[in-house]
Length: 346
Image (tube, rainbow, N blue to C red):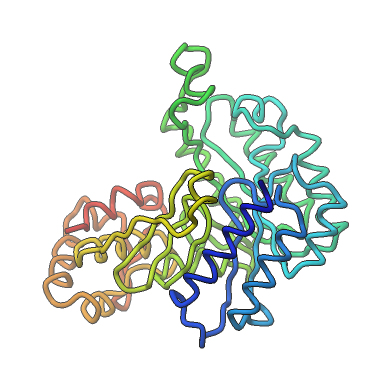
C-alpha cells in the first residue's frame, strides 16, 4: 500500500506542479495529516526527489514532518535525519500516563520522553511539541508540570497548545455521554490558557498566534504563510490547496479512492465576503494583527468602513488594541478570539 500511495503522490505532484509558480523558490515543505512518519524512508526519499526535480527549494527551507512518539524509534529518526527534513512536529499531548489513557492516545508516558531524547540523539535541533489542556482530569498543577517538562529539552523551539476537542463517534465521546468522564468546564480552559500565556512569556516563547508559541526565530514558516493567505499546494487524501487569490481545492478523503485516482478534488471559489472574513479570522489570531490600510487596499472602502464601524462597538473594542492602524487582541481578547472575529464579519 505504501508503494501505491507514494506513486499516487508523485502522479499528483507532477500533474499539479503548475499550481505553484515553478520559477519561485519554495521556503516550506510540510508532511502532515495522519501519520506521515509511518511511511518508509525510501518512499519519503522518492517524494523529495520529485519535489526537488520540479521546484527550486531554498537551502534554508523549513521542512517539517509530523510524528507521534510511538512510531519513531532512534533508527527511524536517524533515517529521517539523512533526508532534507530539518524540523519535527511531535504530538506529545501530555507527560502523564493517566492523561494519555484518558485521551485514548496510542503512546505512553515513557514513549513521550524517550521520543524526545532520541530526537536529540539523532541530531534534530528544531522541534515543535503539541500539548493539550483544558480537559477533565488535567489539574492546573499537572498542566504547569507539563510545561516545565518542556524546559528539559532545549531542542524544543516551538509549542502548539490546544484545548481538547472531543471528536464525534470516538471512545472519548462515548465515555463522556455515559457520564464516566466529564467534559471540561470553560473555567478550566480559561485558567490553563492564562497559565500558558504567562509561562511562555517567562520562558522566552513568543505567542505569535493564539495556539502557537516559539523561541525567537522559530515561528513556523509553513503555518505563518497560511495565516498570511499565501498560496500552497496540498497533496494526498483530504489535502487542501489554495492559489493565494480566491480558489481552494480539497482532495478526496478516502485513501483507496485517492490511490485509484489522485487527481479528483472539489473546487471552491471564494466570494469577496468569504475572503474578507477569512482575512479577519486569520490575522486577528496572530501577533501581526489586522492592518486597516491593507483592508482598504485589498477589499475596498465598503469593507474598510464596515470594519471601522464594528471596531467601535463596546463589546468588541474592550478586547482590542488599536495602534498605528493595526488591530490586535489584548490578553482577555485572546480567550475569545473566534467570537470577536465573527463579530467583525460581513
